[in-house]
Length: 344
Image 1 (cartoon, rainbow, N blue to C red):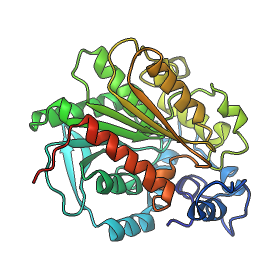
Image 2 (cartoon, one colour):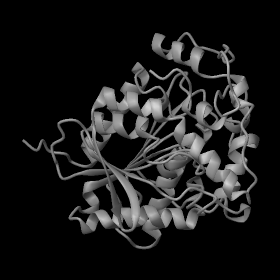
Image 3 (cartoon, rainbow, N blue to C red):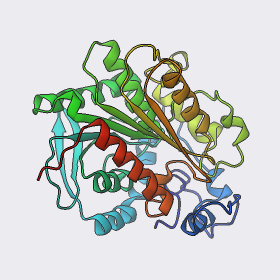
């Protein structure tokens, strides 16, 4: 189990010292969850995020480098625990990590992953705490897309990179019905927005979409941006999320459905979607609103909310019971939608 929140470690680099019990710890979550919440988050970390100026490209590169460096020990722990087989690859000129679980057997299916980090941090390599447990629990080959971070690229370029990877997999012999996509946080917004863009371009769509704590509206719109502002142990919108949103998209485009997929048209076909979130996170309204947008317009969607859990708990605290349960539900959902047959 990690001792500190990944986001707090990577993005609040000025934070140091002991972690205080700064957030309410509910009695209704697992002992492991209580311990993680108690030990891993602090108001100091949440309130001490330093984001570069939008035009400071060198500052962004330094910020992103520090974020990746902070994940080295976590990656070592993940590799030791799960023992995946990982290789670097390039698909349609986009770098990816090809992640196979230990003792993997090819069942003809593949899961594409778009990582989180507010569009401005992390990489395919530094987010192994999400992709590797998922590969293990689903027994799927996972292709983690190392898309270009903002502000080095805006949403139009980034969504096209993800589309290129998906299309490239079909050139490797996969049918789109053999492919699912999942993303967490900003990667959740990216996965959902990319699929909308594919649909509007008349392309075949993945068989399923899984979203963890999706940043489905990058504007500060939605009830829990306000009601959970103090309960949220990771993010402050003004310090971290707003500057990152502006790096990813100009303000005039921030309600474009490919940027903020809650504004998409779900009267048209959209793949079956599983959305997971926690009751302690700022993005809870993002999850609820996206679920309602799909479900109320006749699409197939499931909203799976976890008591007392924080943002992307499935990865940040990958070894607690709630995380294991969420990934188990994800695996069952993908088994059904990808029609996975035992390769034996």
